[in-house]
Image (tube, rainbow, N blue to C red; front, side, top):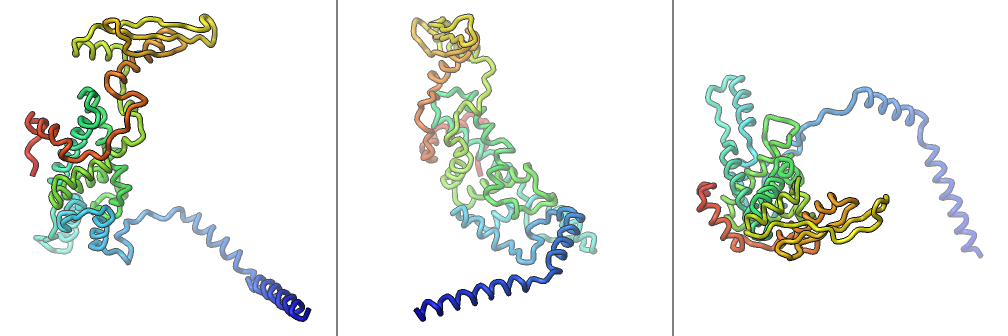
Length: 329
């Protein structure tokens, strides 16, 4: 009983202590905070500043940490060059000339050469990967997917999520998509020079080709006239002309009408499609035929993202032998 009384006494003391603490907040605190907020809103948002303007900035540490985050072995000098754009060198040259330095020495080169090499490597590796992973897809559609995966917006998206925005040395700020995309190309070239073709291919496969994961291939394709495309494909392959035929319809002349159309070639059914009218049904049937012929059905196996450079070497050799791409450095 005595222990219970002591516990209640301590509890009352703790409650009084909390009340006392709450009363310790002075009346001037809330008005002051409101005034500070009003002044901050009146001044507007703060101007965006580069990360290098902070007092704890260490560029060498950032360069080192970038390679470790990606688990890649970069030559530090080559990687620093990949992040240095010509606009930064020109800006620093003007600043040094303004203070009387006639022949300024910056000790770093621009990344123009790396950008050109990286652009070539990315185009080669992405196309070789697509030709290997989707062997039945015509080259014109392979080129469409490659262009989508290597577009400036897509490269900038990947580059920004790799953390390049704060390390890029350029006169422009904030960093735009063009700088982000060109920096990623330079990084690919720097990796090829530092670690070789195999690691460079795996980098491109994981970060660029990996954007296709769990996405329909036809999201990257624009087929305006599926039936015309099907006819051209059959003509190139020496197949009989595709013939749409009405298989069945339900609810004719009603709001819930449904038509089923099948497309035949040499008496063989290539695909079927449904629609609220025969025109739509023919278009959907043609799309289904293209999926069947291209090996990109809805139930197709997932794209194999474990392909290595040796698996795609045949297409790389063919592309180099065609003369479209120069010799890599």
